[in-house]
Amino acid sequence: MSGALDGRVALVTGGGRGIGRAIVELLHAQGAAVVIADLGTAIDGSGGDPGVAQSLAQGLGERAAAFTESIASPSAAAAAVALAVERFGGLDIVVNNAAIIRDGFIFKADPLAWDAVIRTNLSAPFHILAAATPVMREQTKALRGGTPYSWGTPAPRPGCSASPASSRWTCSAASSPATRSRPSPRRASPNRSSRRTRRRRATRSGR
Image (tube, rainbow, N blue to C red; front, side):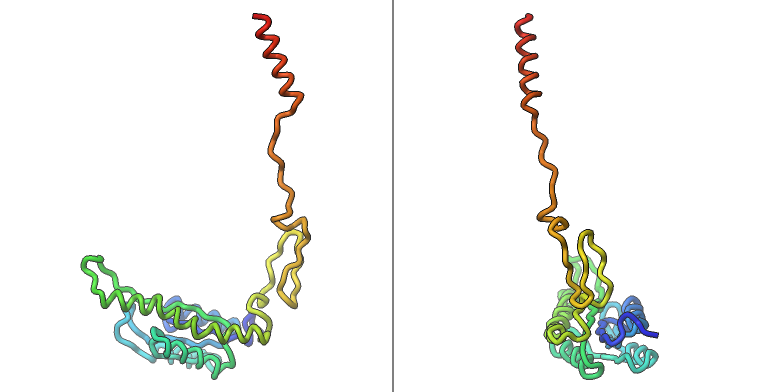
């Protein structure tokens, strides 16, 4: 049975547990090959268990691979992207799901804990996308199975038709927001204004 994502390759960070695991399983069920990037840490980023990602990848089979290094560095992010390309032939989908939590009042917070949160929750997605986008751009130029915008069925637009080959819209001039007719502002009728003026004059003369 074919899926909507047959032939696609996804990279999911924090994909070993919870929401990340659900995303991995859904992408895989739709036909995608998935790289599961998960160090297996606790919610606060402490510890590490490579078996979390490895066991999930083994359970999913040939279309899954585990990456068990921390993605919070440029070199590790590049290695995760390289794994997707080398194992499955490309990279089409990136899900930045990995995050840690270290709660605390700011006047009690540890600056090192702050740095760890920023490194995992903000810097890691930057490093992943910095490594992934060159690959994805080259694939788009080579039309690797179409552009990412043409995988699904385009939503209908009034007065427009979609080309399945290019996933571009052709719209009539009348349907363009810039050329749609707009109701003109209401203006006072000259005759109505003159009638009001005559009534006022008649009222004054009758006093």
